[in-house]
Structure formats: C-alpha cells, structure tokens
Image (cartoon, rainbow, N blue to C red; front, side, top):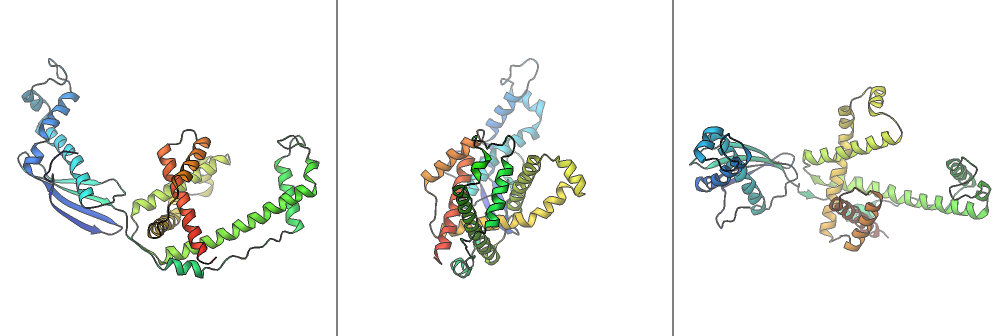
Length: 334
C-alpha cells in the first residue's frame, strides 16, 4: 500500500443495501491520483515492444503516442484503487466476503478520481435465546437395546462386504465371524451407532431452532458458496457410484441449474447455521486449541496429499469449533 500520512481517498460515503451489500462512493484527490503516473508509465513501458527501442526504455512521448492517454489513465486507476480500496476497508472496519465491483465515475488527468465500489460484507448476526433453545430441545431417546435380528442383519452385511475367497481382508475364515465374541462386538457397534444417531438428531433439532430464531441478512455470495459445496459433493458421489453426470441429468430430465435451484434453500440454511455457530463461539469465547487443529490438519494431509495446508487448517478449526459449540449447548441440559 502507498506509504503516506495523508489519506489517499476522500469524501467517502457508505450506503447499506439489501442482502448485506454496501455501496462505497469516494474519490482520490487529483494530486494523489497524478502521483501514480510515473509507476503507470514504467509498467506500460515494460509491457510493450516498439521497433527501434529496447523494452523498458521507450521515451515517454513515443510511449504516449503509441498507447494513448486513456491507457495510461486506466493503468493509473488500477494502481490507485489497489491502494484505496484496502485502505477504505481497514479504516472503516469493513469485512468484505465478495470481490468488489468497481465502477469509475470520473477519470481525467489533473482531476480527482471518482469511483463507486459495491461489495458484500459479513452480515450482522442477531441470535435468539440459544441457551433456552438448548435447554428446551428434548433429548432423543437413547437405548442400549439391540435385537438379535439387528445383530443378524449387521453380521450378514459384514459377511457380504467381505465375500470373495471366503476370507476377510486379514485372512480370517468367515466362520470366525460366527462367535459370541464377534457378535458382542457387533452389538456394541450398533449401540454406539444408536447413541450417535440420537445425539445427531437432537443437534439437528437444536440447529433448526437456532437458525429459525436468528436474524441474518444473508449475502448471496455465501449462499452461492454453500451451493457450490453441495454441487461438488454431489458430483463426487455420482462419480463414486460410477455414474456419468450427463447421463444422470438426462435420466432425471434436469439441468445442473435446476439442481442448484433445488439445493439453494439448503445452502442458505447451512450458511446461516455456520454464522450462528460462529456468533455463539464468539459470545461464549469458545475456540479449538491449536494442538487439536494441528493434529486434525496432519490427519487431513495424510489422506489428501495435495490439500492446501492453510485451507486444511481453516477447515479443521471450523469443524472442531463447531463441535465444541454443540458440546457447550448440550451441557446446558446435562
């Protein structure tokens, strides 16, 4: 960013728009804008070739005659706004969540640069009484009861998944599955599954109520982002099943846009829930420990060798913090 004690912009006005978008109008004083001319000329000089001159050593008059004044002004404007926009964001404590849409309203040598910027910002989140919601969300009935029929079915499915040469992957004969010890292991796994299912159902009920009572003017870009995740997961699931996406769409008589329209409400709900959980974590000072995050990052990178470490860290921190928020809510009725 340009080093100067004076603000490189002036006359800022920030207008709130629906869906947590804002419109910034501002200008850059003429003297500040003109100060970018030297760097703009140098950049253009280094980017073009003119017969008879070495690259980067074209005389200014020749360069201007070749590219025109408008090209120089456009380069100056790009340099100027790459400094002005971050400065406005920092000075006004904005939290953008989308790429800015910039329009120039006045651009001329010796004049202030006037511009408008439209962008989405992180929305304000007003929560309902999440503690009361947590306390009033009934616990799902947990049971340690597992029928012999359930064990038989689970055992049959386990055997089926290991069919082939009559041995499991460890080389054990299938007969070793029909033992009291193995049936007990199956039973314990089924009990644990039921316990986890009960917890998950209560969390879903709790989350639905928290989202329902929250006031969030959600930016379109966050819904789009969640819908993109749903689409990526869908494509991965389809591919894993060995189904061609185009064939699936043809048989379903739908386009990908049709599916995205169907997914959008779910994407909106997921985005709102994440913002609500983030707000609870902020209010209750809940955060994952760095050593926990690093352990999860290591686990992710072991399974996804090409994963970006920074993204893996952000993902792990989010998942672990969400888990801690739900645990906090659950303890309110423990």
